[in-house]
Length: 297
Length: 320
Image (cartoon, rainbow over all chains, first blue to last red; front, side):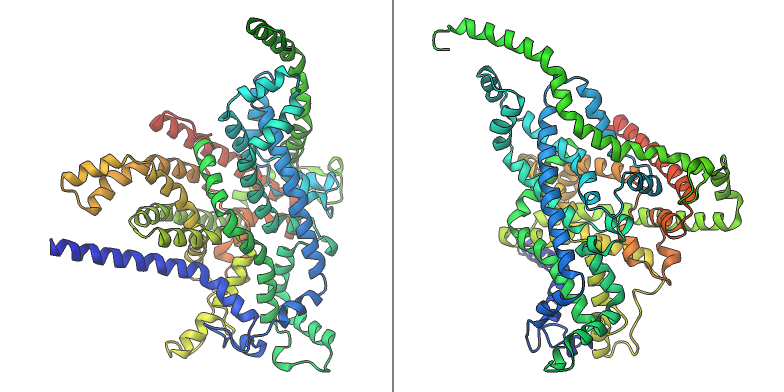
């Protein structure tokens, strides 16, 4: 018996330490970038801020918004996230509801029509030329329109509505309510949990989207925050010179002057902060979403 | 409405239903139409662009003025030496990294099995929350992490190792073509492991607890319980996900490889999706790029149907 208990102990210790180690690996990069944004810029650019912040200051967060284009990019990213998410959630809810209606003309066909589109794509160039012909190159709508109809989200809503009692809809129908009224008064409030899940998925997708800017946008006014970050990763040296010119040589604290490292880390933190802020509250929804998707998708 | 008897209500109900059915059949369709049109425009309309694969199309010149090439671009993948070498290299990279990701697909299973052995709920929840986080950040940000941690100029790892005296010169980990496949696989494991484990954790929660009790009575130890009860219990979930990853064998994505690419690792990191971008958007060879993605789409559809067929054969259920 004693032997067995000891064995269990070793297993548990190894198990706990294994998970502790991997968890640490997952969050250390976030922590490392953060301590570098608030430490002495001279030290951080020489890679001397390793485990804890040194000479804490917050000027980097003020300075980076002086970078040309960053404020605008934040606005573009925020707009596409808000508008895109709202439209995607509405479309998914409405279509998901319509597809629960057996009486819809050609329901099976149209449902399959949407689902098949999940499993193939024409390829980058045909897609790009289509977008070009539609006038969606260098157009803010390119961030919004293609994302509105998402088969995966439609499955989620449809599955969810099908699991709710039909009697609610029926009694409203007898009272003379049409589809739109039933959707607005009954379906929407009823499916809030799944719509919240979709909203989070859609918002994270919009905020993190990088390739659509890369493929479709050359107009600097439409650059997203992710794209700006990517460019700063590759051009930070020239940016740092720009910063020096901008701030001038007068009363500038040399130790905390912008460096390529300070720009990269601070912009990274600006990009990730919204995710970190909403994440703890919505983690449950993420989990719920993937589970429903797993069952039906 | 107050004077109507129950029987009348149901008659009224069915009459209402029938009239609604015939009238609203099209109304429902018309309400869905704008959205179906969007799906058509963005998912089906681009298929028309496959026609560019049969012409020598150049941006700015209309298709009718472009030279018709027949299957030239397709045959040139094999007949043209330079193209053939490129294709072989790109396919090698694609297969290698997809193969590695198939191998690592057992990691979330192990993660889930061992996490359920943890007794402290607080610790378990903590691990789950924090290991899922990387799934929700963009690849650009992952690259930013990689740059800060592994850069040759004062990156974290190099400075720590230099301080400890374990190396004399900083290693250039990011700009190196050795172990590129492994590095890319590890980054994707780092990003997705916690997230992918969620489904298995749920599957384990669904296993009948009595099975464990019975096996314990029979004297089974921890590892026997895992192997004979937990593993078979989550096998169906694993099987579906495995089939899906087989269906996606040649779609290993674009963003990760795009952000991590550089002049030195290009030979090892260029997968099909990146290749299509590089020859199409960077070198403006629209027609050849379209030919490659046309073949790629066809192969993925074939793989998908094959995976679906396997699923029907073994589970009696479709995955699509």
